[in-house]
Length: 253
Ligand SMILES: Nc1ncnc2c1ncn2[C@@H]1O[C@H](COP(=O)(O)OP(=O)(O)OP(=O)(O)O)[C@@H](O)[C@H]1O
Image 1 (cartoon, rainbow, N blue to C red):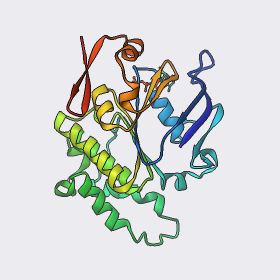
Image 2 (image 1 turned 135 degrees about the vertical axis):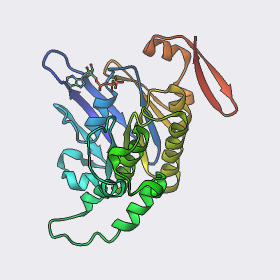
Image 3 (image 1 turned 90 degrees about the vertical axis):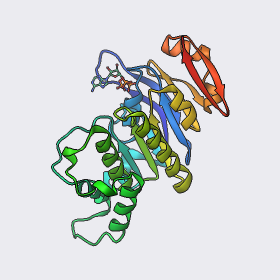
Image 4 (image 1 turned 45 degrees about the vertical axis):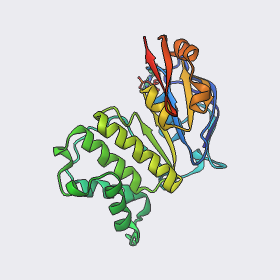
């Protein structure tokens, strides 16, 4: 996917993006990082047809997304949003099945693959044992996995995740990131995440987009992009990068 020359403003008074360009490499894990309010979620919204730019275009492959109908778009792109707290009054399996909606039509023709895909999504997200429970009775972390399973039922080529680890304890954070890696390596799913944890971003991504004040300030492989000077400029914190085996991590001081 790519966004070309994006201009976007929420209010007349000040614009957020003035000619933003960004390219998401196919088949890779890309993570968008940057301080609060720099525009990460808005960029994600623009890439996923949640917002329409005042100027500029977003492309899925070589097609401008404005010209792709919502239903078709949802067969290629799915989004796990940041806050999913609405009451749903459904069981886990029922809610996850809603992810098949882009494949259903008014004539109620049978969605041949539905059962197989729902089962796969429940297994990937370790929800088989609680598939008959009411979603409203689950913990925040379990619910997050249910929404992810629903997104997976769309069988997307590109999966967007906005701060997917924010409600999860450390165990489930790592599990979710490993699941994302599995989806990427086994199914070549293109992944785009927004993460706040810099060390997770560095170690679970192939590609990092660093944003600051509505601009993309760096883009590339984590180890080439992340350095102490950049962190200080963007986050106004000092820290030291350390190596542990093949991983690097930042320790603020
Ligand atoms: N619905 C809205 N109406 C007006 N301004 C908005 C709206 N949503 C976001 N903004 C503003 O746009 C800017 C970018 O917000 P955005 O949510 O994209 O940032 P972010 O980098 O995702 O932030 P965070 O890390 O806090 O989630 C902020 O200044 C924010 O106040």
